[in-house]
Picture 1: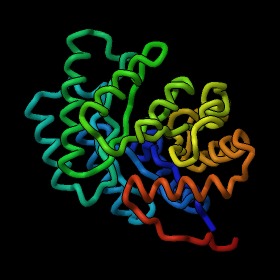
Picture 2 (picture 1 turned 90 degrees about the vertical axis):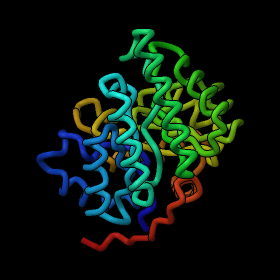
Picture 3 (picture 1 turned 120 degrees about the horizontal axis):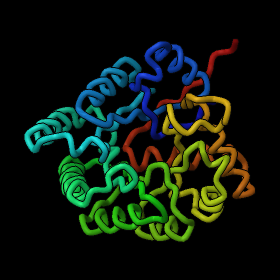
Length: 270
């Protein structure tokens, strides 16, 4: 029985333009479901189309990546938020949204991204949808710390810290607040992520690839959702558990947080 889930990837990106359908069909052989994230208005439309084409397997999350905020007017952002509201029944979450101190360093631009981030947090509450957070700093966990405070102040009930790169102590604080951390395929190269996998209860963990980025294979430029299995394996290894236990926990978390019950699928024999 197929059970593994990739809760965050970008199947709409140009990296898959030459073989997108083949990649998705290959995913169906190994995964139970994937969430593709729309990062701006145009990408959002593509994400919805893909989710429609592969209903029940590809799910869409719509947000505005912080690096795309500055180039948008208030009117454009308002129109996009209206688009998301209209399509609320076709999506499973708002995201990715957040703060990026790596690419956005100008204080005025940081202020702008923060304001828009808060707007999208309010939108998630209006639509009663969980948020998927992009929080990236130059070093340490400044962006994660700031993001945690903002969602807590906004009284957000369900939040996933996508591609978590912070320290285990910070991950523990996030879980104490009732939020979740998602570990990517780059866990194979990260001692800190492995410590997070060991210390955080399965009840608060998710698994992702952030495809086409962060391939676990150093000689492979493009990541694919199937590689999420390395995250399951590493979590099981760190917890001295078995992969099946991790699979059951992540599936339960997905259904609880994203409000989606994925139908069981059996991969047909070769």
